Amino acid sequence: MSLQSVQADLAIRAPDLAVEVTEASTATVQLLADAEYRGRVLALQSMVFLGSAPIGGPLVGWVADVAGPRAAVAMGGVACLAAAALGQRALRERPSSRLVDTGEVALVD
Image 1 (cartoon, helix red, strand yellow):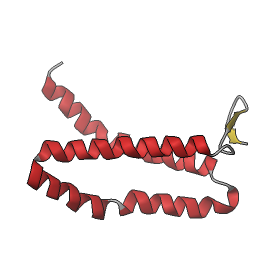
Image 2 (cartoon, one colour; image 1 turned 135 degrees about the horizontal axis):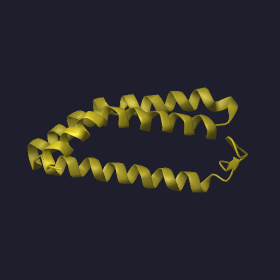
Image 3 (cartoon, helix red, strand yellow; image 1 turned 45 degrees about the vertical axis):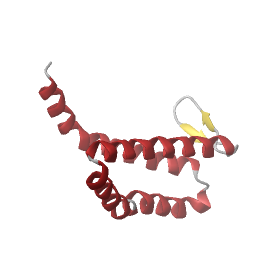
């Protein structure tokens, strides 16, 4: 398989992967949020997902101008790793966010 065919395959699948990540994160937030806070938490999640583009876009563009496109992509990778680490730490610190496996559906205990 050539590099060009791999790149074309990734370009075709990227939108689907973005939708899958968004759906998975929304489902996780709905399962882990307490019922009385679920709407507020989902509103905050959509504000983070949709509101980060107007801030991050110009910042990444400026970094690409100053340091080059590789630095801008590396900055995005570092930001993703930092967000994943913070999310993992937050989930570990919240003892009530334990999922209970009932055999068919995972329910929040």
